[in-house]
Length: 384
Ligand SMILES: Cc1cc2nc3c(=O)[nH]c(=O)nc-3n(C[C@H](O)[C@H](O)[C@H](O)COP(=O)(O)OP(=O)(O)OC[C@H]3O[C@@H](n4cnc5c(N)ncnc54)[C@H](O)[C@@H]3O)c2cc1C
Image (cartoon, rainbow, N blue to C red; front, side):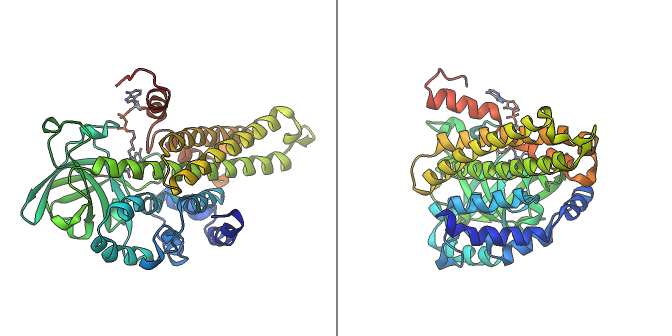
């Protein structure tokens, strides 16, 4: 999508975000409550359905439009973590879901009647080694029986559907460890209390993340997405989208930190002059700006490749690496520029600082990206 065509959408995002100023997010952060009103406003404006094809009630746009929306939400001082999963799981449903699944769910997701905001991959025993997950889905007639445990599954309490990864064939019975994993579109409304238990985890910022316990949860066999045993491939594709979208959020955060620091450095007077007149203060702001701009180029290159159906693993990983480091550097610079006030809640800097730290760990940590680049792109010997 051309930049000028995106502008009206981004203008809508900015107008909407202006109705959710710092005070709104501070209160949610203090109480650790889900930003329901914000989610409803985004849904009503049609912003969460941009990736859903028009035939199913969405706007049928590509990943770069979704990335631009998330970037703008973050640049406006808001946080898209409450809603972004719908965008990064959409590719799995669109590319691999059956016609029946798409016509059953997508129109309802587009109107907001149903939320697809949970993505269930990580497990306590497997960590980053996704193929080592032990949650099982066992087929019996027209149903699958799910048993196991997941951790860090965000928004599970605020979602109706979850894209779930489980083992359908034991790892030792498959030729490759990436085989035998399957993806399900699980209706959580039917599952909670019938074999699915959700336990919230309190974290250093407001993220509505949880642990999930599956104890003989019976789900219809029609919940399976695509072919049984091929789920890892489907999920990998979704993970590239996730990395690009998260990178866009980092860019938004980075822009917010740079703007906030520039404004403060211009207005705060010490020793009879604005602190931003000192090169020791202005250079870190300029450096952060350059880092954010550079990471942005990689992010939208990755989005363009993904949208064109070209391999985008290398670019998606580099975008997430560079953008998460740029937003963190900008956050650190912003605290320093604000001096003591960087630590005061009412400036929002300390909250955004805590929020943006996540991206170097989730959805994939920096080391694992470097290992991917070193071993899969540069051909260095494999370390694991
Ligand atoms: C707030 C939050 C929300 C999340 N939301 C979701 C969600 O909605 N759905 C979901 O499925 N998951 C979610 N996650 C999980 C997230 O994707 C993982 O935390 C992340 O992938 C890292 O996995 P881990 O925590 O198990 O770390 P581990 O795999 O235990 O790794 C710990 C550290 O060791 C390093 N490390 C491990 N192995 C190697 C190696 N071979 N070489 C070099 N370094 C290595 C890692 O880089 C990392 O720094 C969330 C996590 C958080 C904190």
